[in-house]
Length: 360
Image (cartoon, rainbow, N blue to C red; front, side):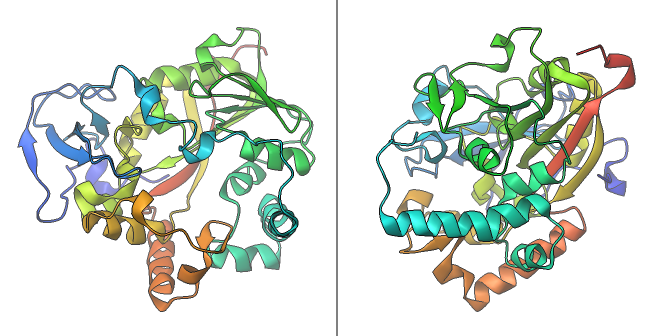
């Protein structure tokens, strides 16, 4: 991950689009400690469309966007009946059509995403039709019998796909689950990373769009380090404060208040790693057309829950949108931003610093 020249030794503040409302606030950045010239943004909850307002701070030094006051009851913003990743499998048999489409998606998308080297995978990737969590795990190159922990596993969807792909030692934890559960034979536990036994070590720790949800991301990264085996790897996928934020300001859909508590810039994530005893061993950017499509909807005051659901969807894309010229233009822009490390989300591979390692 390269740091832009303007950010070596300090990132210049982002300049969101015209119309974004800021007001001055002296507030300490939780990542770099800066207290000077940080600015607040008033953000609205737009996933469910409540439009409840929350104050965030954009750090003038490291670029982190972070909530000013963490709600005392975050759980109410993760309704188990409505938050997409927490809906547990019902146990009822799906319809034959649903089973057919799921099997087709698994064979045509999930399997190639794990291999990430075939010609078919390249075609899927060009259309943003890969399975991004599986793709991220595949690029970590871990064995199928690796001890795998997913932090913020939700309903265990990614773990269930990995099990079908041959992974045999899987475990998930998530504090927002309604309770402990077994999904597809995989234990999903309602707990925090710090609740794990100190003797629990893993070859692969996955934080798939979960680090931005934790109140203290540096403490979480330190806990990840403590639970990695000596040669273990952590996979962190998350939004990144980049070009889409500069373009859309408070309408950037990845802000997702109040669930996203901290959104890192490239600079601030390097600071967090330095403070956590982890080092970066690789990364890639994988933003999609959604950064434009959904941000423009939010700019029109249309919430995610108010966008009509399509009759059909495949992979990450809604089929009616996938086929439009506008979506093709958005994809091309997203891929160009990814190539210059300016996309609005990325995957990072982390390992323990040599001086921080201990046997596991």
